[in-house]
Image 1: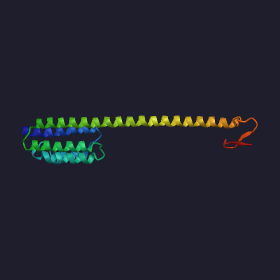
Image 2: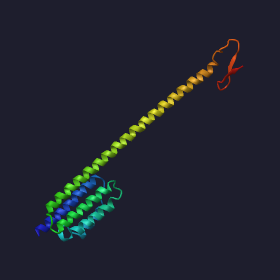
Image 3: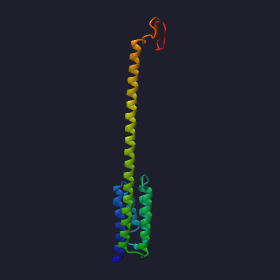
Image 4: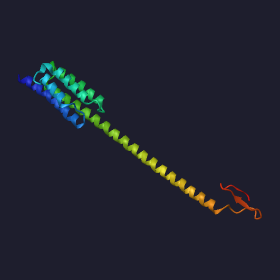
Length: 180
């Protein structure tokens, strides 16, 4: 009896560790779904460990539809099912199952963090590129404005002096030189 209680507690502990980590990542099913699994498949009954874990996985999956790292979550849920099956059939102890689940969860969290950092780095690069493009556009706009001012000033000065002293040269409205 003590062994069954210990196994049930271990499965619950595995579930609670996953719950805490998923809560930190913003992905967790509703409390009602978890309570339903607890009621239908008691932690103290080792013979329903696989069914219990499937219930928790289903609740987790329905509560995390928008979660970014669905592949990591699916990997963890499959691994957790394998652990529950091994515990239920006596192939591993509860403590071994807890250790395996903790190790897998640590790997999942590391990968999720790596992906998050990678995404932030890409976003920072994009922002730097946008800032450079904005600076280049502003510099180009200012250069065009300066050129426009210089051209306007030249037009207001009138035509340049005529190469031949005796023939007058005039500029039309567009600055084209020609005889007057």
